[in-house]
Structure formats: C-alpha cells, structure tokens
Length: 481
Image (cartoon, rainbow, N blue to C red; front, side, top):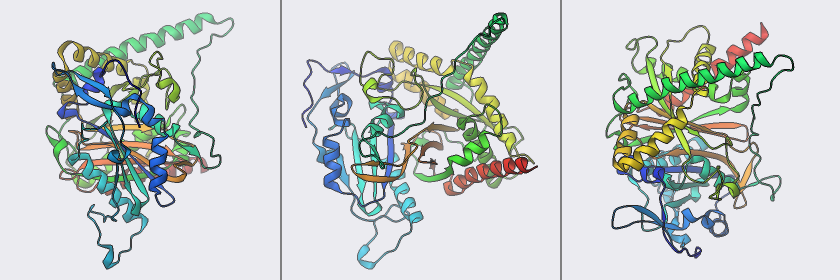
C-alpha cells in the first residue's frame, strides 16, 4: 500500500525523540488471543484495509538528517515485512516443541509459553528502522498475536484507541466496542450559600498549589538525587539489559468494584494501588522475612493521560492535528509511593492508605509539570540530557504501573472473537513493570520482571491476586455483621 505523498518530512515530537535514545528505547506489546485459529489471509486483509496503515506514523520510516535530527518520511507499506508468523508451538521456556514426538498443553502452559516469548522479545529484539516501526507476530498454534509498536509512534492511549477502532462487538458486527463511560465532575454553587461554595473553591485551589509544589520538588529530587532503599525487588543502572520473565495476574472487575464500594469515593485505581501495596508486602515477607522495617517506602512511576478527555479516545479526533486530544505521546509522569506493612487484621487498611495517596495526587498538577519539564529539557538541552534525567528517575524508583480501561463486552478482530487482551512494554532499568487492562468483566495485569532479581513472578502475581481476595472477604464479613 502506497501512503499519500508529502512535500516534506515531519519532525518527531520531543517525547518521540526521547523514546529513541538507547537507554529509553521502548516498544509497546499488545497480546491478543483469539477463540478461533488464526486465519492469515483474513489477518493480512484486515491490516491492509485498517485505519492503522492509513495513519502517517504507521507508514513512515524513521530517518535522520545531517544534523542528527529525527524525521518521519512516508514510504510504501509491504505487509509481509511486518507480519511475522511463528508456526511452531512453544513450551513454557519459549523454546520450539517438536510436535512429531507428540505434545499436549493446557491453557495455563499455553499462556506461559506466550508470556516467555514476549519476555524474550522485550530485551533481545529491537524494531528494525528499515521499515515503519511496528510488527505483528502471529502464533497460530497458540491462537495468539502480538502487536509490537514503538513508543515513539504514540502512547498507550493512542495505540489502544487505534486497536479499538479496528475491532467490532461480537454481538453486532457493525458496532464499535462499548467502552467505560467518562465521569464528569461539575462544581455547582448552592442558592443562598454562594459564600460557602466560594470558600470551598478557594480551599480546593490552595490544595492544588501546595500539593503541586511539594510533588514537583519531589519529582526533581527523584530525577537527580533521591532513590528508594534497596530491597529484593530493586533494579538499577543496566538492568534493562537483563533477561526477563513475564507473568499474568488475573482479577474479576466485580471483585474490584465490590472492594471499591467499601470505602466512600474510592476508584478502581485506588483498589489497584492497594493491591500492589499489599502484594509487595506479602512478597517481600516471603523473600526477606523480618529484614525490612515497618512503613518502608517503595516508589513507583505511573503514566497519566493529560488529554482533556480521560480514557481511550475517539480516533477521528486523535488524527486531527488541530485538536487537543491529539495523537502521540501526551502523558505526564507521577510518583506513586506504596509502603511495606506486615499483614494486619484489616486488609482494607492497604486500600485506605492507597486512597489517601491518590487523593493528594489528584489535587496536584504533577503530571502536567513532568510533561512540561521534560519538553523544556528536550528543547533546551537536547535528547541526551532529557534521556539522562528520565533514566535516572527510573533507576531511583522501584516499579512502573499503568491501568487502562478496555471494552466492557467481548469484541472481535478480523472476524475472530477475542478471549483476552493484554499489554506490556519492553524492559526498563526497574526490575518490575506492571500494566493492567480490563476486558469484558476481567482485568489482567502483565508483570514483567528481571528474572535474576525476581525469579518467581508467578508467585508475585498470586500475591496480588490474594491481596484482592482478602480485601473482598473483609468486605463480605463487614456486610454480614
């Protein structure tokens, strides 16, 4: 397919240039599993007619001018160069199975095999710059495909919005996926009590100023000097090159919503952070019993969409250059601390502490500050120093966490109903990265770890799963009382 011609190359955005630096070269992986065997002709036909290959980023080569500045240059697309078919079945170690000797696998082994395949890709397989920076790996024996898309093409919100625009509901082949509805907060005055409303607004504004100042100073210090205390899950300089393992933690959205309702004004993100805090405490107790002090801080990094509309976006708006909800890497970074605590009598304490942390973050402009400061450093000092600060921030923190709300109902892609959708990224200096995506009443969190630091990610996944179940049981006990 030949893309429309253009009179000049398009320069990369500052964030796009950042993701091309060797230390922060990041690829986004989206694992989709079908209910039916893969039909290669249908897959290639769907790609050729999709909105994806009509988007300039997906049909452009990365080129550099004589001054070293990166640009996008339009190029014809050869689908066969981008679609990689792995016909052999894989074992749990990611090795090919000799099927002539016979083999039987269950769904759990199947998932472990695909996870290890993606874990190996996350370290050892950068995307070639001889073609546009995306690939589709198809594993017919596992009814699975893996989209690999370079982060310089766009952030997770952009890329998931693109994927959803090419999917359809299984109960209506013409309808787009039904997504989580947006919640809009409206501040209203009360008749006869406008003075009370005004005081509330002033207090709200004061909190934004104070928390933004505090968190912005902390962000700068974390990018330069301050680091987490070393634990059994700490990464660091060079760890992005270490071998990886990938595990999946599975949750029911109904369980998360039940726990959410137990504490007023709580969100799914609060529940997720409470699960992570409890899960880390469980895991560290297992790895290093009695070695850590109560209340030890473990700092994470979370990406926050800073477009005006939260959640996945309308693709038609993303592809317009003159809209605020534009395509690309439009996100800021916030620091999210969790704390080590030995198990107590009330598992919901983890949730309450997480909610208190997130509430403060909501009253700050930390995400916007981090986006603007990164843009400023890139513009004034260039990608080398912007990369250095970003890399240092990742070395000084322990984990990365993200959460995207996906389709509410089952969907299909290229005529094949999907049983699961999971996302993760290639390796970072941190020893652990976690990415959760909800789909049709379930939420699956991909946990990518440096296996020489965290050799048992499956146990860590179980710690997170058990954390949610304990919170659920605590809520049910309270409801019965």
